[in-house]
Image 1: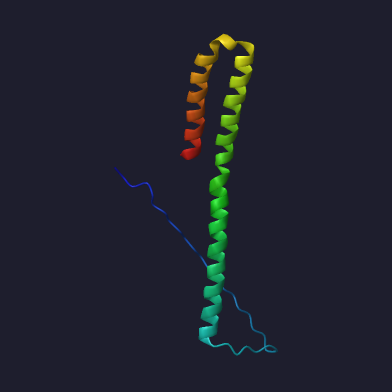
Image 2: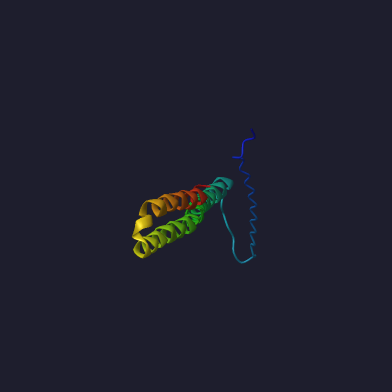
Length: 104
């Protein structure tokens, strides 16, 4: 069984510094490394929140599917109350299938 949890992250950082003759910077290498590390930390934190939001947006379809299943169950029972047990069985099956798509 192969492991399907492989994650590949490619990060490309391009830093362009333009210094004109009228502006002089006296920044040591340690300060520059500190600033770059700080910016990378903030970018990583932002990427984590964006990733969590994108991952949760996939559950919208599962919620809509579950709502449709139980809404249709209510309508079907209102039309034919004698089939309540059989319709409920089918509704639970539909609920399980809609939920399974959200968990994938």
